Image (tube, rainbow, N blue to C red; front, top):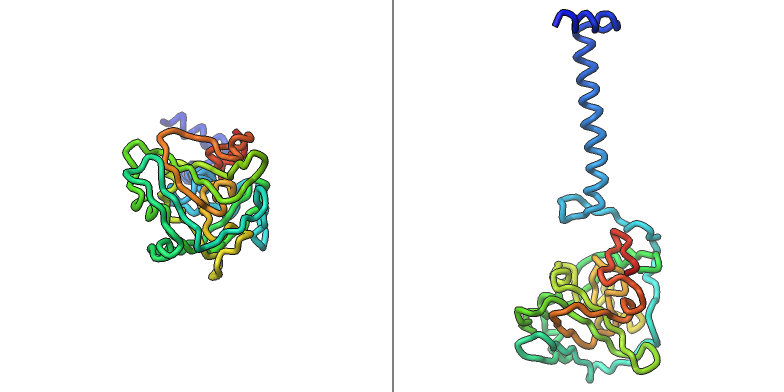
Amino acid sequence: MESARSAWKVTGMDEMSRRKFMRFGIGSTIVATFAVASAYFLMRGPEWGFPKARLPPGQSEVDVLQLSSVGPVPEIDLDKWNLELCGEVEKCLKLDWAHFLQLPTTVHVSGLHCVAGWSKLENSWEGVAFREIMSLAHPTVNAKYATIECYGDVGSGNEIYATQIPLDDLLHDDAMFAYRLDGNGLSPEHGGPVRLIIPSKYGYKSAKWVKSVRFTDKQELGYYERRGYSNTADPWTEDRFA
């Protein structure tokens, strides 16, 4: 112990200076560790108890929701519109427009992140939560995914637009079938009368002009997914391509 104290004296440090030096070193280590951990958890998002950054990596904010779709905007007669629930369910059913509007509604403000690199933040969506629709469908125990199929043709061979999402992702509070945007009815250009909104995924998962929900036990590929885009489509990890 005496030799250690002598060593500190040789270097010009007394006992008090040594203690201050040690506290400084420990404090610097704690600060550096906290900074690294904070950056990691901020990227992880609210599920870890931290707020998520406003923009996913690789995205640029735009002031107006951009128009983006595959194929022409379909003309949909509300008197003939139906939302069909089928597949791995106890009994297939269809909801007409009047029935759909009677369902409990929810409002969530969220961003829409296009795989092309733009994001429109703070969109106020109003509609019916997916879990509300799911409760009507009564999926079987085998159901693990939902394939969303849409009105309109998107190419040769009468191909329709479709995408698939795991049910676990669709049970988040902000996943819904929206029919209003920022206090107004959802325009056909933005997916009206009804589109899926799932903010945790790139925009091609938020399918426009929804026609049916088909519950499945196996994973399927939708329109973009068959063309090389990611089936998980997580914007926070830039999961753009398969």
